[in-house]
Amino acid sequence: MEEVKLLGIFPSPYTQRVIWALKLKGVKCEYVAEDFFNKSQLLLQLNPVTQKVPVLIHGGKPISESIVILEYIEETWQQNPLLPCDPYDRAMARFWLKFGEDKIPAFFAFFKTVGEEQEKAIKEAKELLRILEEHGLGDKKFFGGNEVGLTDLAFGWIACWLEVLEEVAGVKLLEVDGFPRLQRWVEDFKEVPVIKENLPDRDVMLPYFQFRRSTFVQQAKATS
Image 1 (cartoon, rainbow, N blue to C red):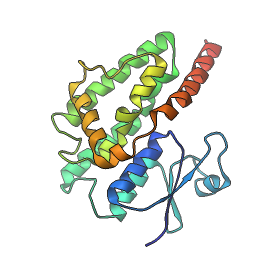
Image 2: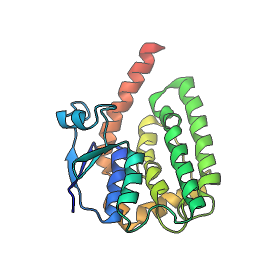
Image 3: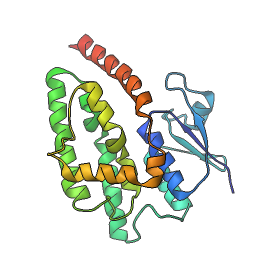
């Protein structure tokens, strides 16, 4: 079997979604931790275009961008499919993958803003969560049906990161009464054995995001 390596950073949800996919596929991987503030020469060499993690190295060939990596993993290792067999269902899964990626700046804007800008960002984020709940998840257990799939991994940050971001920013987006189906999905997602065994450490995440939030607040005040 060709060697598999993953360059990543904790607590990046983009890195974690790739780790989850590899674990679900049963693919052994060597993890190489990168420094957020001091990128290695290896990372710059393997991903000179965006210079970002994650980067998957398979047989000496690097693949960048987490969604692209997820698709590569699905196509390369056939066991434990993470996309539906039906072409239409696969297309719908890819639609929601793209929706999630396109809306990332809007989803996370509440964490980077203050005052009126933050209020606007909170409203927009809630509207996006409403769309995701009603049209993406619906009444299904997972986004693709009864089994966890790529779309669930892509939105895994809602289950494992959002609560920390909310606490640090002093806001609440995923209200219990407001998003019952997403709340149920969060619980189901975190109970999937592979996910449960590979959840990010909240105690490590909290101080990191407190630092990031303080930086964003200072920047916002400096430009106001």
